[in-house]
Image 1 (tube, helix red, strand yellow):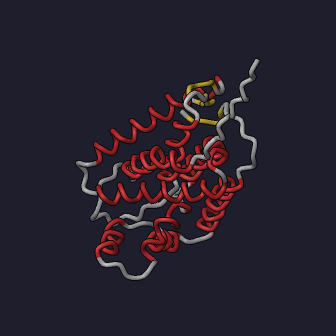
Image 2 (tube, one colour):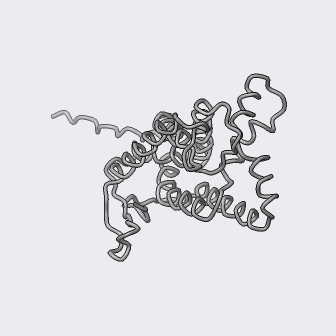
Image 3 (tube, one colour):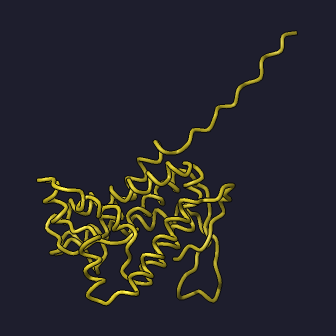
Amino acid sequence: MIPVGDSTRRRITPYVNLGIIAASILVFLYELSLSAVDVNSLFVDWGVIPVQLKDWLESPSGVEEPATVATSMFIHGGWLHLIGNMLYLWVFGDNVEEAMGHGRYLLFYLLAGTGAVALQVFFDQDGAIPMVGASGAIAGVLGAYLVLYPRATVSVLIPWLWFLGAFPMPAAFLIVFWFLLQLLSGVAALGTATGVTEGIAFWAHVGGFVTGLVLVWVFRRRRPRRRRPPAQVW
């Protein structure tokens, strides 16, 4: 199921969300200009390598290694990886930004991505494959959206029924279904040597989602309470 829109209207321009999408696209266009060897070097230098990050945590030195937690969120491994992530961010991110405010949303996004990396590294401490992509941070956005707009609907396309067009679906159903799929896939990956299956770091998705569920209560803007009109005395 591919979300292409939602029912929640926004009243602001989501500058941060659009900026993240633009930055991710620009980085990917840069990747296309590189040779295969240089792309691999980009992944190694700017992606998160679990075993190296674990070693840094045990003996901190410099900032290059922890910086990859942020830089990895803007690197993608292919067209489908990029388009899938940016589509989810386009549909869900603008409303979450509106509920939090621009600055808070940016910090929330980065922290959700950090939570995603933390859980994946916990389950894959000896992993040497670079982790790249915005999926973990976007999972945090989905968790926040679920809390903020539990009654919203999304328009989705089903690949093998695309000719029927998009049809509405409760956003909560789509998001919970997606999360359960990531959780079950993560459990299945525990039996593999690398902690991932099909090149997908499922525990990063789980970690980002749970981080988003928790942090949304901190980062959402509080609505002012309505004051009751003074009582009239007769």
